[in-house]
Length: 183
Ligand SMILES: Cc1cc2nc3c(=O)[nH]c(=O)nc-3n(C[C@H](O)[C@H](O)[C@H](O)COP(=O)(O)O)c2cc1C
Image (cartoon, rainbow, N blue to C red; front, side, top):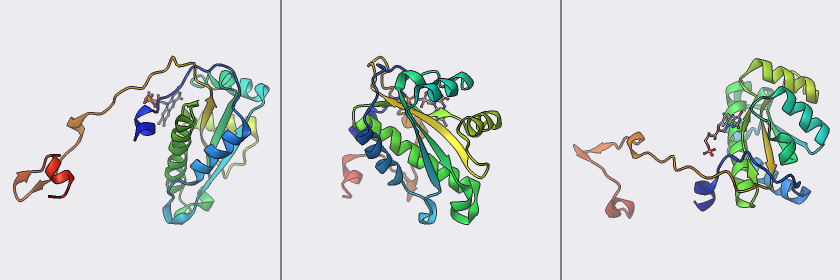
């Protein structure tokens, strides 16, 4: 719970690169994500080359932090490997893997942020060209991972108004000690 509640999008990095063992652990977490009918329709491109990070940032206005982070993972979805061959399942499953990357980075003391590629057709085309990704593979996002400066803070987004409690025999169920413990 503390990792989940402490995770935040990190836009400011120290410039120091993370180690390969850390990337490996983070990708273990990525592939531990749930996937429809165990199809695991994802692939991961790890980028540590500063020149490539700069050229990606040049075409991605919302991913300007890429060079400063020093490392990035492009999460790719492969519809051909997804449940029923559907793009939607490939994207959903790869989004689950992406969230695991964000959480693993937080748990290991790093910063990370989902920067969007999908579903913008122009951005998909740009990233495919830059990284020579074949047309059957969809780059979903680029996740910069690095050491956070500490400037980015977690935001409390919890809003009880967004929870709609079901009624049980006409009585509104509320979250109380009693129903938490099944009494
Ligand atoms: C689908 C998706 C696309 C996003 N795209 C970007 C992006 O391109 N650049 C960026 O800096 N943050 C991006 N974010 C991060 C959100 O802006 C961020 O999660 C949101 O502001 C909430 O802040 P938090 O992650 O710190 O809780 C994206 C997040 C999601 C889930």
